[in-house]
Image (tube, rainbow, N blue to C red; front, side, top):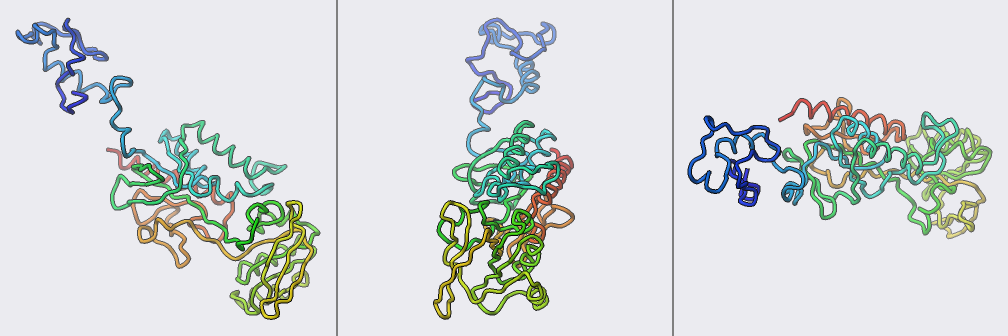
Length: 382
């Protein structure tokens, strides 16, 4: 193939050999009876055109180092693109990389997901002494890279799922993919206070199941007024000496049965109406909170060791609105494991899980999505 014109059967003039020899990489050698040279071929030492076709049709289209790799210009084609680099995305990357699918992982807005913001993780299997969240994420990332996964920074701003290959835009780059795994996660809502994010893992948490054990025998607060807040207050009472349930209104969004359960718990104290004005942490670790009564403007401080924010999560699904099915809260809908309504698009992790939201369940769903993607690609070869 002419590397510059795109036509097969011709050798670029710079590659012409004055002595008729087979093109580099071609094992076929001319036999005079089969490929007689005409006068023009003999004059410039060009290989007979029929043998050129035979050789060049069997060679790689873009041999390494020979010419500019035109495929690398503009959009990039991949078997698998994974959006998200938390537990779900990294597990999917490990599995697809081991299947030799060479996945490209787009880190997203929160590289490493929520686990990268936590400190000590004690409930992930295989670590009897626990492991730091960022260390667990880094180990998973290295494992995926070991098998050939490629990581790219940047948040996804646009996806085109109307036909395969799918197109995913992140920053200035556009990637084409024969299959797509969406593991973009969900972001916990915070109170919007100054320095709040810096206190995550230092007394501030958004996951009672993950971190409750660290507050054994200590006073803590749960902020929120929905079912999740009631459930977390009851759960945390197993460990904490006292649980202050703080809500900005006297009325709750939670169901009556959940409110009744929390009120019946002698360790749970309702503090309403109250707005958290400041999380006290003079040395970078939570020591208390300052509250304001919105009706009377009266202020109050409570000494405690932990604050659990339970005001909900926002799935990172903005770019998929109108393209993939979601529930009323914006979480992607999966069917039969990780499948979506679009063939070749799979979902995993907290982006489709508003119930469990655990590292181990996210990892499991990442495995499922990877296996489903591998099977899909096998069934749609060519």
